[in-house]
Image 1 (tube, rainbow, N blue to C red):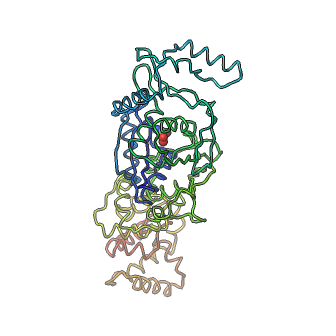
Image 2 (cartoon, rainbow, N blue to C red; image 1 turned 120 degrees about the vertical axis):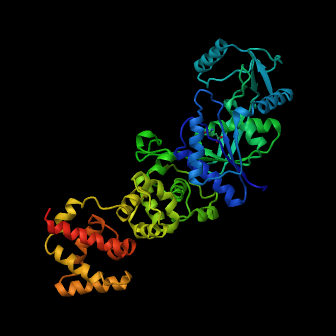
Length: 467
Ligand code: GLU
């Protein structure tokens, strides 16, 4: 086959949501997997519902997901001349015709078809009239009168439509504007798209688009219709299921790679592998493993997978995505080495970047107050004594390497005849303000000697003051 050319053609009538992002991802992955081309096209012909805000949100979400396009963005509203040319060509070739039936006539046809138990359809009465263009005329495409139109769908298998059910549909409205299916087919044809992966809510549009290819004698693209994404109650995913737009997931602190990994698994599998890096997906994605059943969106699974992606990250790579979340909490560490170390201690403990920013805050801001429960539990006698002895043991140390810290802790444990947990508890609260934190020595390594000792002393003073 020639170079694979796929496309993502969102209608800018809202934010990029989970289903749309998955469609974009599948097309993008297939293009990347095959060394093909991925086109972005904005289907903005619905003037009432299309907004610039949605266009911007779609671009922003794709950029965040790092789904990049090789061609476009094209805007359908800028391509009306091309559509007109194609419509004229279809008329000239005898595949389309002007129709002047009034709305009342069309309604009557519908009623009649219904009364006869058939599908409401245009009865073709202007088909052979050879009418000229006129103010109120629409253009209709001649549907094949008999036989079948067959989609060899790479996801759903063979789908057969009876041509008797297809009618001569309108490709140009009376105001001269093209209709949706005409525009999509002309775009796909002129952009050389040869693989169309889209939601199965478009299945019924496909024969209409195929009619244009067939009229013009152009090879059909490969079609694959993806099952819808459902909510946990198996209803089609909608707002009431919670977060749905890609930007909401970004704001929840999901990593783009985790989002891609989650989205791909909503409709594609590779054995029982769940975790994929971006490069692995590009390498392994194929059409044959796209599933036939609907994916069920489960936010908890997304969070768990995000945790795994965070855990597998290189701390340095998280600095940039983490920064807005730290800024939101009002801190902005500039010492990148310390920040990297701090992130390193939080990798196994953060499901999201929101959690990570919260978890890292104590490293970079003064502890304004100790967690009340932690004080109750960990600042009881002999906490002051423990902290005092530890301060003494740590003060002469030249290095805060783990072995040296261990040695100092061991000295206090032996002197007092108590175990590591007993010593660690007040230290943990002194250093972090909380009783859940990264490992003791890890924290001390990040804070460094001066800051760690300062916090231990403050905690001792707090306990001694008996507040
Ligand atoms: N604009 C359509 C949508 O947003 C997609 C059409 C297509 O993929 O052919 O659902």
